[in-house]
Image (cartoon, rainbow, N blue to C red):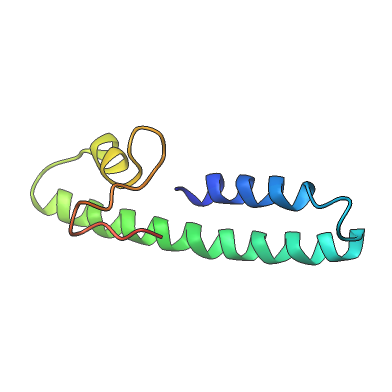
Length: 87
């Protein structure tokens, strides 16, 4: 799952809590998930950069293949690859 997909899922969940928590609690939760999504995005960018460095060393450029290996066709990580970490 990409950081953006995760963030959208979390924001939808927080939004569904209207009857359970007040606005200030929702604001705190929203801020927390945005910070976490930002950290996830940084990690995903770092991983992509590292994998790109390997590809360039091998004189290959395959960003779509990398994306599909990591996130699958539906944006779901393919954890069967030993070099891919599920974030």
